[in-house]
Image 1: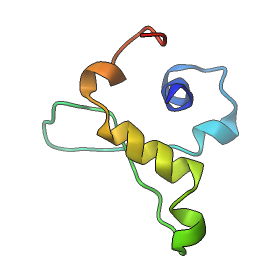
Image 2: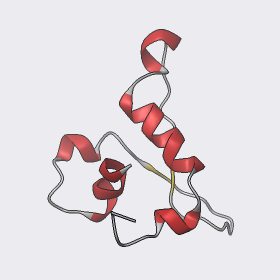
Image 3: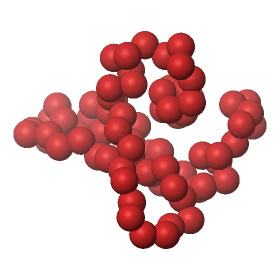
Length: 74
């Protein structure tokens, strides 16, 4: 999750890492502003287990307090 957090908040993260995750634009008011799009895939075997899908799915399941935390260690 640190990799996901750094891809949005840190400018020194490589471009190929930033391209793995895209923010979902939500037009209505929600508690958590930063949600990630789940990438589409063609096969369950390879797409469902990839880093971009699993990381986005886990990130979206975190609480908003954890997502907005400024300290990576806790």
